[in-house]
Image 1 (cartoon, rainbow, N blue to C red):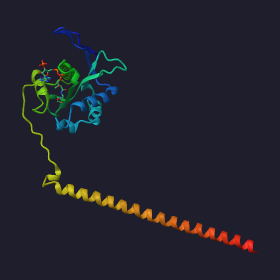
Image 2 (image 1 turned 90 degrees about the vertical axis):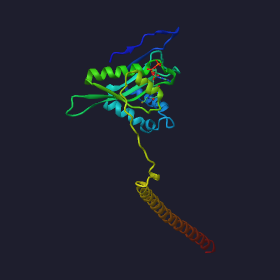
Image 3 (image 1 turned 45 degrees about the horizontal axis):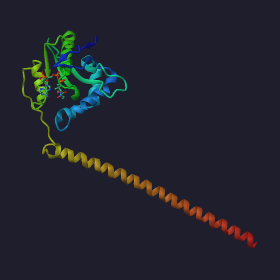
Image 4 (image 1 turned 135 degrees about the vertical axis):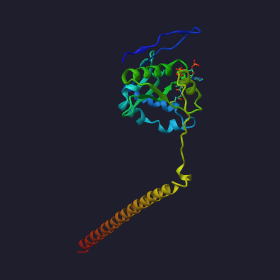
Length: 237
Ligand SMILES: CC(C)(COP(=O)(O)OP(=O)(O)OC[C@H]1O[C@@H](n2cnc3c(N)ncnc32)[C@H](O)[C@@H]1OP(=O)(O)O)[C@@H](O)C(=O)NCCC(=O)NCCS
């Protein structure tokens, strides 16, 4: 994909930093994962936190590589302390059999805190939509976020994602759930029984080997005694 270099433009006399948007490569995976892990925090966005892991990145890279884009710092040099990957977007296209419509979905979007409001996420989403339109003819683009994620809500609103539908994410701690707590209890009891059985077997083996050792000790003792007796016999004889 042709690299898209943003012009160094002047805003209020301050030179904006330059970055390029391109498709994600294998060497970007670790940095993308880490950037996500820094942003999708358990205390802020538990749903994002729970579903973000290395497999999410590698799986999407394998299944939807064309829709995995990164923003790279143009001034980054090998060995420099600055971040190289300053943002990413991972998306997918949903095509329903029997329907002429296909939907683009922004699954994950993130820009580095030190690059906030520099147009990183904007450029990433623009490029993603462009690819999805060109390659898959999408007519609708979707995204979802926590209603309390004001930065993201404002970002998407600014990009024209104005058709919003509330959606509830439901979760339950199984330990306190009257429907499923017995299942948890049963599974824990089975696991405890298995551990106890393993310990028992270990103890049996330990007892058996220590029995063998005792036997060995006895034999060496009696051998020594025999030797002593023979020596004595020789002397007296
Ligand atoms: C939301 C997010 C992707 C925006 O990235 P960004 O690179 O700063 O966005 P851009 O610079 O392209 O766009 C900036 C626009 O986003 C909105 N925005 C971004 N940060 C904002 C903030 N702190 N307060 C209010 N609006 C904000 C504004 O509309 C802003 O436009 P403006 O600067 O003209 O007011 C980024 O804050 C982020 O990574 N958040 C954590 C991860 C996340 O929540 N991802 C989305 C769900 S998967």
